[in-house]
Length: 136
Image (tube, rainbow, N blue to C red; front, side, top):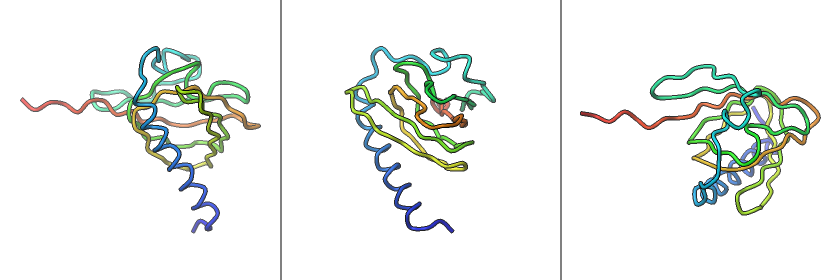
């Protein structure tokens, strides 16, 4: 079972991500799809009419989940490594996020820039949701 410090850290990270998502939804102009922005760092692991599953890898000092200002639809992230990341929101506010191997978290549609400020590679799976199929 996780200790109180880990639970508290996760709550802070999730609360920050939830607040950031609300701000990020307000400004969508100029953002690129993460795969288009950084194709060498991404592998499309699976895609169908409901989801797109992306695997990405980032070295220290490099963008994490897309180069420059980029966007993601609503998505689930699964950390495949520990990570320390600087996130810059469209309004210029900077957030430092940390994750541990195995962390799983949800994000609404968002726009940001990111940088790996840790000492190792960052790896993760991003499961992006597509619009649900419409009933006839």
